[in-house]
Length: 577
Image 1 (cartoon, rainbow, N blue to C red):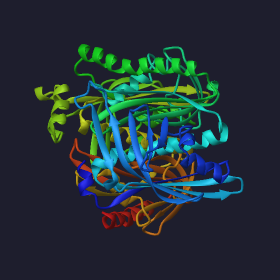
Image 2: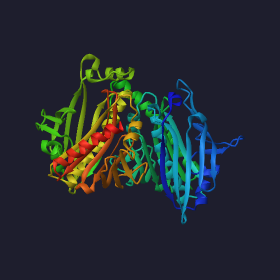
Image 3: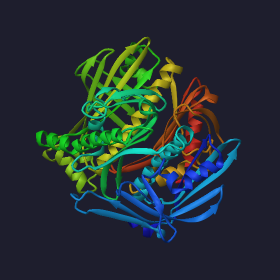
Image 4: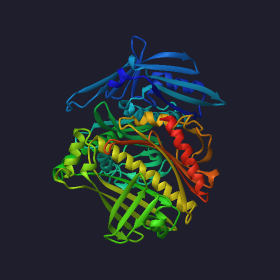
């Protein structure tokens, strides 16, 4: 990996949890090989040279040495060697990386709090280079789950042996997004029931296409990356399904950690899970032969405390649109009509209305001309050819809204389809996806707190080179000199209270609406009459631009207030970048 040679500045992952167990018990769970296998690796032991090894069914192995041992307060380990095994059908049957020259280290700090333990993790040494982003993001998400699994084990199953169903399947000619849609569809994990539209903390109940029942509480749901939850009907087991893209391969992992469940029952579950994951490549092969130009789509769902007629108007009325989405809008209603969304001096978005069913369904399409696409590599060329753009045809994408009223509230489902393939398209897809997550929360915020009020927008933005690492730009933006969130957590959940401090001296109190590093966060601002604040980084190789942004939407305040924020925050961004 080129980052190993080029690495200079680094970044860290920091997380903290409280576990209802004595400090000695937590220490043992972190340092004893047998205890480690109850929540973390599937196998663990000690090498003759004193290093500790961990493995997951020979799929992934790594060894680490202990650098600090201050029982029971602080332990630090550093990787000595890592080995990633790949399917023999791949061009290379293994990819190894990682030795002591990486400079990575994992620190656990323990503090006794009565009968409980505060545990802080610091995983340091990740390069700021762009080719480390996937490893950093995957490790961060992994620690979210693993620390939750540690707490779950110690608080609910301590002393009970773990029996795990574990399957890893490599993805061949199928994208992560396509595999997610198939796996979490009616022929996969969600044969009955639903996960779509649910959030962490929500209860769920599903039956797989193979007939297995899972019901419990969602811990993480981040399409198309990660899903984890308790499985209460299996004696409070833990289920995790996650997709990785590391070191040139893509894979999907299924892990069900059970306690007190018979081994033959777990093995049968594992067999059915393996069949389900193996079917992903077969399903894709069938669909490719039928339609070589298949594209992908993004779907999300949100519930809004407003009548369906009110939500429909907010989506289709020009004045209403400007109160949560664009700064200017024009709408010619009905099939064949047009929707023009404008951010003056930045971009315009022209859409043609295909479907117009008031209070039920709106579909609008738009063209992406091939000559607007920056052809940065062969993958982009492939993406264009798949969409027939080489014949002079524009690429057509579609945005659809589906509305359903529920006792005075509205469930709004958005589907944005037509995305091509290739790594530049991945960035377009990801950027559009999290863009909709923040815009739909802006819509919900407007309708639930400011319906009928005009909006003023203060928008500070700075251009970044297209080669910029999203993670490095995020680290520059979210720090004590830029935008700083307190408490200083590495991950917030929707609904968490926070303080937001800016390098300009502005201080806000509010509630997190979404938090997705290293891309964006958005939050309410209670001390500005429930304003809506967002900050984000977007590097888009498909269109050849990058930018860092801070934006605030105010209601009931003079326009001069938002203009003042914009001026001072633009100065701040220029200092940061």
